[in-house]
Length: 98
Image 1 (cartoon, one colour):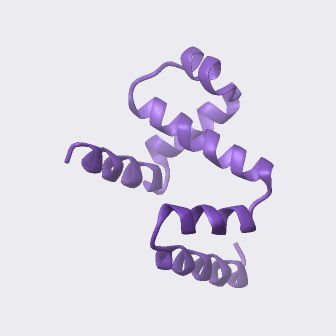
Image 2 (image 1 turned 30 degrees about the horizontal axis):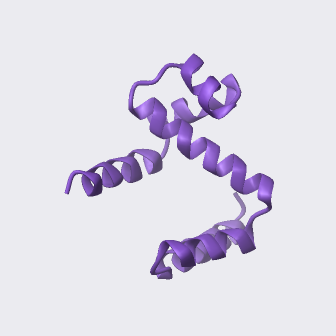
């Protein structure tokens, strides 16, 4: 990424951290993203959760409609990525166990 794009991403990350409720987050995402982008992001997040719970590719395709390429990409991110999926999936699991 170019230096300016990193600054823009940093600004976006800081903005997301200022959100206080799921409704605020939803409102911002709806303003920032197209319907298709939101569908794609939501699908990838669902795929990550299913992979984390040990679901196989066939089950994930059947339930989400995600392509095998999308599932593979998400799986690579879970295994070798920046650990963003891992961080949030672990935190969500902790919240659900309270």
